[in-house]
Amino acid sequence: MAAARVMQAWRKRQISLATLLTGLVSISVLLMLTILLFASYQSKKQSLYETTLTLNLSTASNMSKTMDSLFKSMRSSLKNAAHFYSLNRPMLPEDSEKYLDLIRNSSNYFNSIAVVDETGMISMISPKSVGTAGKQVSTVATKKALELQKPFISEPYMSATTKRLIVFISEPIFDSDGVYRGFIGGTIYLQENNILNMIYGNEILHDNGSYFYVVGSDGKLIYHPDKNRIATDIHQLPIVHKLLQGKSGYELTVNIKGITQLAGYSYVPENQWGIAVLSPISIIKEQLNSHLMAILWYTLVPFILLMLVTIWFARRLAKPFVELADVVSSIGKETVPLPPERHHWNREADLLTKTLRLAMDGIKAQTDQLTQAAMTDPLTGLSNRRTMEDIMNRWTEEQKPYALLILDIDRFKLINDTFGHQEGDRVLRHLADIVKQSVNPGDVCSRYGGEEFVVLLPHAAVKEAFAMAERIRMTMEESDNHLGQRVTISLGLAHFPTQSVTAKALFLLADQALYKAKHQGRNQTVIAN
View 1 (cartoon, one colour):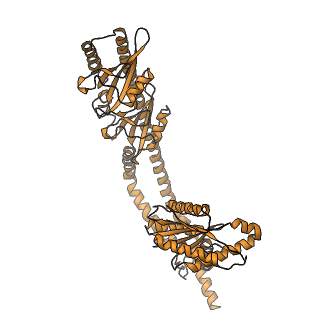
View 2 (cartoon, helix red, strand yellow; view 1 turned 180 degrees about the horizontal axis):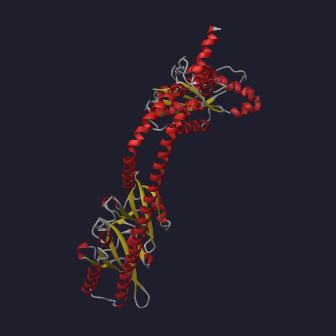
View 3 (spheres, rainbow, N blue to C red; view 1 turned 135 degrees about the vertical axis):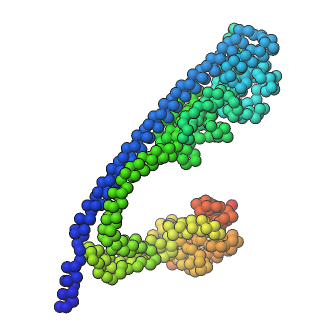
């Protein structure tokens, strides 16, 4: 009776969770202010994103239009020159030289201009300092231009003679009878001063880290503020992939350095290039942080007062549940501390603690049973495939040398077909017993599946592993079994790290060695190449 009266008095002193709801008023205010702050932040963020993306797209579009017009002019210049040569054949070398110099110096389109005849010989080049006049064309681009006999723009390539990274543009030359007489071609030296540098080199987008690049139709950089990046293949980037498909647009993207950027990109139809204008997302974050700090400055004092009250309520309410959460979070670990046996001032926490203590005893017993079942093959008692793969991966990561044996019962299907699957299972258990008895302590024996078994031999050299494999094979061959006939096995052997540096590749090598053992007549061990 006394104990009952004590328990009854204690329950009266416990506080229901419902009585703490009054404390949620201050929390509701805090949440409302937080939601408003978050909404303002997201709205500002979205606005800045859209503005920056639209601006970058507009800039990229204007630049692509400029480049489109530029290449049309470059092609027109070469086409006019080709027409001039077709009307003035033959031309004296000094006149041809003056004409080429005039074209190159008047337009500044090209770093060099050359005239190539139908045999592939460079008859004239400007400037003469290039030194290739009188020689045969040797680059893939010039040979292709000679072969195509039509207007051509090359992908960036490295010149074998000048050691420069070049884009080559050409126009064919036909005489008055329509006979092909070669071509006139201009080169742009991508890593030196060129027409792209003249037009875009002084292009100032912003002083906040924004920049742009030009990409060719093969996904390689044609122009970049960092000249060392020119000719880098970036076709794997999403926006470059879309540019190569002839698309324009804007989106949030990540560059090859893992930096998130706001990109506007535009396709250039004339040369099938693309221009991308990018702004680092950090500039948006800086503006958002300034916006957020301004709002916080005006709400700081009310927030502090409200938070002090809220913290007092939250701690008082959360303490028993935190203790229970710590206990629950440790379930599944090697040691699980039981919740302390004491009464809580909160009724719900008190009931949960008592219930949890009862439940954890049952959970622990079931967990131990399930863990063992998850790691073991039920037929043979060996570890299963999952356990074997986990051990292999762990040893590989630790760079721990080990040998891998794959065992397979020869003509096991014939055994099943002749004697039935139950007798086949007895053969599997018989082999499992032999493997367990043959290996050393610390070795791992697993059933991989079907009639295949795997043995992992830590710190074993190839010679030792081969000896172990042969011992298992001969023991199986010479042992008596319930079938009354000889049962043999074939084995494949591979070694880590001498033969492979990954667990997957190592297993494949051992499996190939096993296949070779089968192919060579079975009942033998083969070491992987």
